Length: 123
Image (spheres, one colour):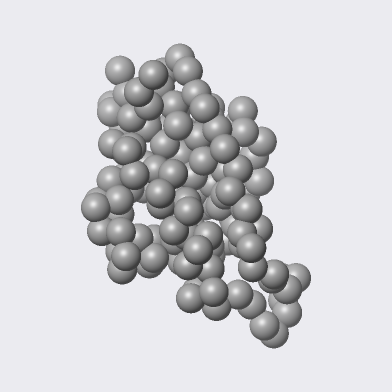
């Protein structure tokens, strides 16, 4: 089955990538290999240390036609900087970057389907 739409929820620990249509979905979780400090710590992960993580996420969505990137913190913005610098063709497929707390995969899928129906890009 061909999945044209993708939603990516990511933070510094993991990314939930869901490929979907109006009535079917497949999901995967990609873990980062980087060790990060708790929020508020003086030291955080440098973007260049996260390149393997970002690259793996990008590779998982390269066939998508429309991508929604969401997450609770700054990692979604780091991912967009990575895409713009290293994967411009994938960056062009990103339709929106939004702040979303910590949904489960079912909630994330419902959010993404609602977004794409509202956006009129999902039949």
